[in-house]
Amino acid sequence: MKLLNQLLRGVVIGIANIIPGVSGGTMMVSMGIYDTLIHCITHLFSDFRRSVKTLLPYAVGMLIGIFALASLLTFCFQYYPLPTSTAFIGLILGGLSPLIHKIEKKRVNALAITIFLAFFALIIVMALNTPADVDGRVNVSVWEMIVLLVMGAIASATMLIPGVSGSMVLMLLGYYRPVLASVNDFKDGLLGGNLALAARQLLILVPFGIGVLLGIYFVAKAIGYLIRRWPTYTYCGVLGLVVASPIAILLGTDMSGVSVGIMLASVGTFAAGFVLAAWLAHGSAEESAPQAEPAAGGNAPKDGAAQ
Image (cartoon, rainbow, N blue to C red; front, side):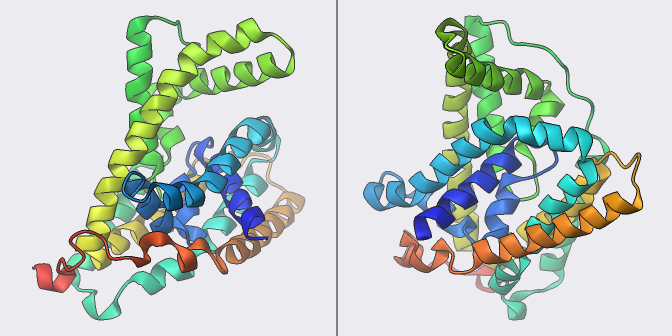
């Protein structure tokens, strides 16, 4: 049951990462596994066995979500945008409680509130200023492969930050649809027996994937440091990003053709997402995470003492 729970969480994170405006990092927070995954990534080499054992089910689930459900999600957002969006909003809000409990109330001061409001505003501004993506395909060349590596690093770095959509950043840079097209072509090539088509897409997806891994590792290191050094301020910033996410998702949702039936369906998908997030967060991997052992510099002063 625990393995199935981890796989399902990975699927949710994978789906979130391919939808512009929806943050995989937010899903991690909502399901109570954010600290665990950050810890395992940052301790991948120093505690390799336990880190890989924890990360592997989530990674497999993410791949399943990305490759198996990308087409379904594209269909849902095209024909049922509001009910699909409210399902993700339910997932986000259903898991807010664990994050709120991480914030030490006695350390919440004017600076913490300012950080919360600043990060909240950042997501709203980004949502209001996201341009249309450039539709096209990548021409394979050495230079383009280098660019893809950089794009992968940038996208994955933002994917790990709650409230910031890696897909939205790729869209901003004009690489969202080309990369998604390569993913779909790779899948179609494998399933259709067209190995030449699948192999061509690897020239695009491999450098992008390497960039993704590098970005995840180094950003996780930075986030891990902030959580150890200034936990309350860091979690206030994360809370601002997460709370703003539902508004950002709604701002990017097509509201045309909304009827009473669509509204009722949206309420239903919101409730389903909310309940699912609460279930996924219950008994989460936080309880058995390897982060129980003190990190290097574990005696670093917390928020108030660091001032």
